[in-house]
Amino acid sequence: MTAPRSHRLIPLLDQRTIARAEPVALPIHGRLPLPGTLRDRLARPLRDLRISVTDRCNFRCSYCMPKEVFDKDYRYLPQPALLSFEEIERVARQFVALGVEKIRLTGGEPLLRKNIELLIAQLARLRTPDGRALDLTLTTNGSLLQKKAQALRDAGLHRVTVSLDGLDDQVFKRMNDVDFPVADVLNGIEAAKAAGLGPIKVNMVVQRGVNDHEIIPMARHFRGSGVVLRFIEYMDVGATNGWRMDQVLPSAQVIERLQSAFALAPLEASAPGETAQRWTYLDAGGHPDAGAGEIGVISSVTQAFCGDCNRARLSTEGQLYLCLFASTGHDLRSLVRAGADDTALAGAISAIWGQREDRYSMLRTTSEPGAPSQGERRVEMSYIGG
Figure 1 (spheres, rainbow, N blue to C red):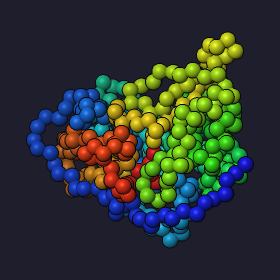
Figure 2 (figure 1 turned 90 degrees about the vertical axis):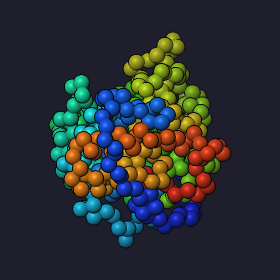
Figure 3 (figure 1 turned 60 degrees about the horizontal axis):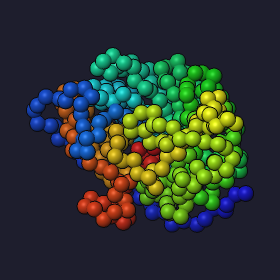
Figure 4 (figure 1 turned 180 degrees about the vertical axis):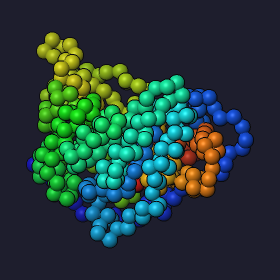
């Protein structure tokens, strides 16, 4: 069963102007924090950097880049506005020096960025201050993964996360809104497995009345496959997706549906700041079934996880955002292109993170000082990545 598309009023806003980053001033002279000791105002460390490499995508998912806004006349960023691979590597190197251990490449659709393998090779050479390689991963819609999986692995990519919102071809085509078949994404996942890009994660954004009937079929398909399936609550990111709370299926209800078909038990978080609540399948004896794998839910709306958020986000034109729901960011590109040296660049990043107190999801339903106001404009997911 599929739900008809509802009519929505979508504001025609350009996220690059409503969420424009502020100029970054060089910090006062002083020593940089020791590697791994940088903390924001809520004592959260900087461990994870998401880098958007393009604002373009070949899908038109209604919750991210709806056709009503991103049509044939939409003006994408011109090439000179984008950070070059060398600029991205240089900025990333300063983040790593300050404590970042994981880098995720996002978009738009990152595999649309020409020669993305060259950037991956550059980032794969970075090392933490104690000599460890980074956890280098990429999120993709999977449309080009079958073609590119081996080259990505050869360049040094470790893992991929694939966005897949259903197995039913008609549901999937309606959600991506470009008539792209689900079989091609599944083939891309198999190619990634064959190339050694793992463990692979598959993210399903669940919208009530749209694809929630695909929850159990998705779990059945990926159970025992070695792929980690995660269900994500439909989020109020940006202004173009026409988000409504009644379209959110809380993760607690997702788990209830899954438990009607499978025996599950909760798992401990695998790392500090992890966004997913993890569950393992149980065998007939009630013991964890290692061969069946695990699933996860990301409760970004109903259960805020801001308290230990350790992620920063760099847009494709070099704007630094400290929260997925940010309304403004910080202009690192101007700093880089003005000739700031590495010490100044690292100092600016350190100063920005040190002033951070973002916790949108914790405040969205409160009246505390700093709580988001109704209708406040925020950066779009398509611009900053998930």
